[in-house]
Image (cartoon, rainbow, N blue to C red):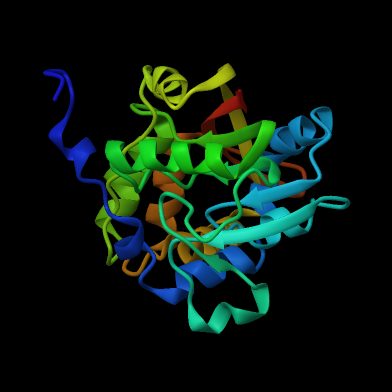
Length: 252
């Protein structure tokens, strides 16, 4: 273990523990419109590389469905609730077993691997490479280590949600890990996104459901969002900053 590495990074809140509550998974299948900015860049890249067969893992529901106009989308996840049968989500593991090899033009992953250990993140990268066709693309956005987003999730959300929240977020060496998985044309950049709401009431109600917050007041939630993330009020909208890193890589 590198000496400058926090041991907690090796034991994030597992995906299974975080999403054992099916209500959180259902939140991804309902109104995720405030997060639209998170995937606009991904879909711009999808269109640039002319991807048609697309795997979304972990499952993002309406966030993907409402933007994908022409793509053939396959949903997969590591935890699949019985109540989500209508979505036809494929139950898989971190190596993406059960998904066809050399099939997809692109794999989309939206802030989904920070609940995986280093070892499982690498298995996931190898799995994405296996299911991609030659020259296919891995396209992902993820939380960056030591960012306002990671601090909000671990220092605030983690204290007020039953499952807790400790993430194994992307460090500066993540592109090297992608290269070890034998990807090429690797690009990484930090992109500021905005979650967009009609007003602060909408922001508070939506974030409470989305993060599974159980014992927090509206005032405290909004104060923390403003102090940690940065919040703005404009005419007929309220926004909160959501900083993520975009990573793209091509199968050799």
